[in-house]
Length: 216
Image (cartoon, rainbow, N blue to C red; front, side, top):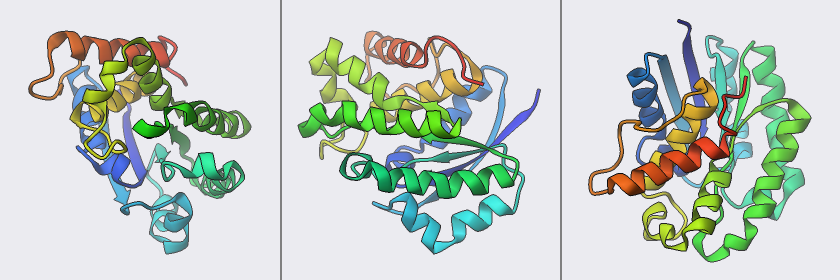
């Protein structure tokens, strides 16, 4: 079975609660192999990573099968064009290195839930344009809140922006569903204190958002 070697480029939305590690643990439990490296700068946009140069050097070093791009959380809403420019810069370098571009679609802030449609659309548009793999965490997050507004209390950290441990677990479940085509039902790593029913709701939302299938 091939090993996925993934480079994650983003900020605290990826680093918080070690989302890459969560994904790797879930994958391992299903018999898949995943190695990973994370380049994270607090509050950074993809352009910040590009300008710093470390991310590009890592991509060009080769060896990665996939590169996950996570944009600063509000930039796709404030400037869809700028966000798309950032993705296009990285996508060209990723393709040249023989890897696949993966877009980590994030969620709107708790006080701006009405912005999710714009955020989702910005990611979906550039995914279609580039042929990148889309991991629709924001879509899963929004669907769960729509069906159960009380879920906000378990998904968001106290700042109403960052993910709680449960929010990161939901993100990891969506990655498992997309990258491996695995239904995350029963996936390990649910946060301590999360009820079995709540964990099942997160797993179900992730699978439904991924279209109940893996995306090649």
